[in-house]
Image (spheres, helix red, strand yellow):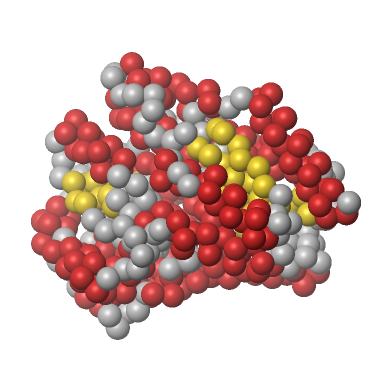
Length: 440
């Protein structure tokens, strides 16, 4: 550890970051007008922007103070927290790039370097960032370690292998066997042993010793944070719902990238308090909620505002989503008394590592629990594990529950895939069907 780097980091943490946050807040003093279709925006939005901006800002000054790990969203990050790694999530960064409608630019850099346009846009954006150094976050630190898990997809492994080769750094892979029918004891033990075998590698890379009590405290915090996130999503059972899934897409960021840290734990307590208050006062996310919808798959980041407005103007609110639910669904498996086995269950049974029947049953349960009237499925070119099977899911759900549904062909972060005319035609037809089915 460099004394000079540590001093600089401390100054930036105590003085630089607050000054930057204050300046950004000053620039946002004139809020963007809220369309009449929406209720009052969440006050917690401001805190969310502060947390994420601070995280990216401080990451520039971390080298020489802490080791940096780039991590996939489904990886058991609690283990890294025990060694005080500063974590960067390329998927979150790629979503940020997509939200700023810069995805095609970054993807193009990767494509011109030989990466296929059929590759996940998160991967292409990240590879484009690595090759060019470009980022809307200012600057990202180079990783000392890559940490990935194939419980979300196989692409991440090859994506991270490409980075490891380019930067000549170690890669740790958490291999989660796919749950074809049910998770076996052999699978659980295999994953639990992997986690324990990672400890000597993490000690060597971080230069820190593993302490079981520190790890267990982190696991407790992560568990409590995920449960609070689940409770926030449960609050959307209220009618009118206190926020929309488009709100939740943004507020998901800390549970993904800051899980296990006090800042995430504290943040969701604040958000929970606001959501509870809105429920008790009958404050809805949209001004006149008449229809309740479910969203399947990852957000279309460059069209979140458009979609939120389109549906709100038609008195339709998304109150649940398979995507946001993924960070709450398996939290109940976590157990500090048996950390390795419980983490194996938690990270091995998430939605994208589970069979289609599990997903169908989950979606049917969510539709009934949240009093859903219609379903929108995003068939994304990038995430094939999430998109394969959607036509079968739609057929089963519409047949069993008589629920109007539409599938939108788009992409999570590459705006070139968006077809304005086709999307509008499908959405208008869906809205007409929904209105006719409920009040016809």
